[in-house]
Image (cartoon, rainbow, N blue to C red; front, top):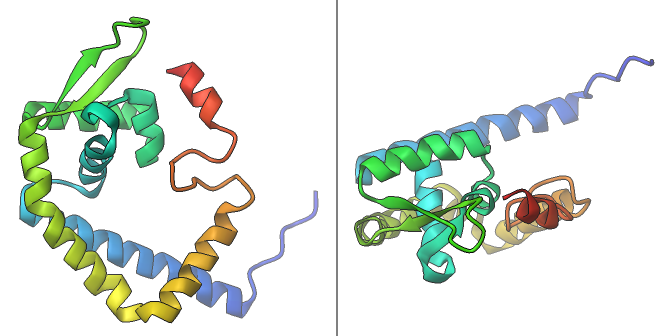
Length: 169
C-alpha cells in the first residue's frame, strides 16, 4: 500500500484553522449554555430537536441520529436531562421495542429561556463576523461537503441511512 501524501502547506493551514475555529466556537457556545441554563451543547441540541418534533417526542435512535451522537452517549445525556425534569422516557406502545424521548413542560420553559441568548451568541461568534456574502459561501462549502452522502446532513444521518436507522430503532 502506498504511503498517503502529507497535506500541502495551504491544506495544512486551512485544516488547522478549521480545527482551531471549530473548537473555539464549540467551547464558547458550550460555556455560554452552561452559564445560561446548565446545559451542554449536545443537551441543548436534544431539547431543540424534541421541541421541533411532533408531540415534542422522538424515538431514541432518531434523536441520536439528529444530534449526531451514539446511542450510548444519548442515553447518558437523556438520563441527565431526565434527572433535571427536562425530558422523560416513554415506552413505544406500538412495538414495545423502542423508547420515546419526550420534552417536558419544564424542558420547554428552559429552552424558551436560553434559546434567545444562545442565538445571539451564535450570531455574534459566526454570522456577524462573516456577513451575508461569506455566510452564503460557508453554506456552499457545507453543502459540497454533505453532497457525497458520507457527512451527516441537516437531518443527522448520512444520506441513505434513514431507513437503516428507522429499522434499527
